[in-house]
Length: 299
Image (cartoon, rainbow, N blue to C red; front, side):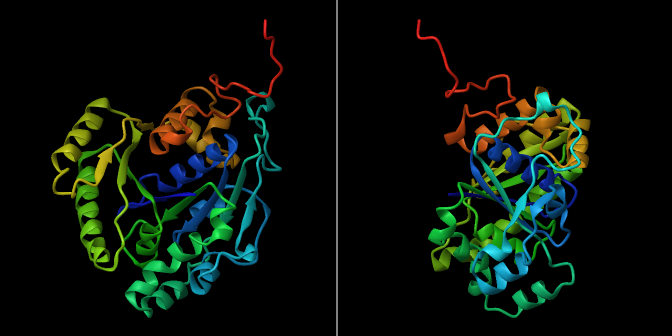
């Protein structure tokens, strides 16, 4: 099982968009996916319609230290309200998309976490996700986080095998990204003293419009590579500011359902960069999809 935490110290950079669309794409290439909404603003919780809504969510997961079935909701694809073109909808390849809902807006979970010892608090997501019942049930876990440093973000970072960091394509946001990333690294450096490791960080430019700005920000990240402990690298795939992402969120489906050409290609390339072991695997509505189970002529 591979765990990716989408993290940023700045809000509004597209964390939920990335988590939802990568999760939907992974499901459509046939993998078993668990989304965890660890943001106090439950955007990921609201992205997909649910065919089964579990009675509990993030609060019980964190407080009990166990991912029990009554914390796991099931996403519905397609949603009952879906009115898109059926020929654009991918065929089922046996994938699964489940969700642990955010239910922390009242602040009680954060208060509870602040009363715990630091090491215990850091392990509150790591330990349940490492349990054999979870690792055998899912191939990929995607964790969405709040756009601010805090206990939930720390626990989500510590649970990850890889961090995905979205960056807006303007110089002010890029400098905020650099400052926030360095602060995050400083904050988690102490975990090395108890045998933990800071996961590698992959930065991705989101909502891009101007190639010149993209190049400037890529150069800026490379210039600060040493200061960021050599842990942050920039992905070559960029996510554009396309209307298709808003349409997909409105319809409660992944963007590759709405635009199976351009934006589907973007999300596939991003996924293949993030998880090289799935490179070449496609949703069935992607132009490069090959149905290995289809009958074929050997002659």
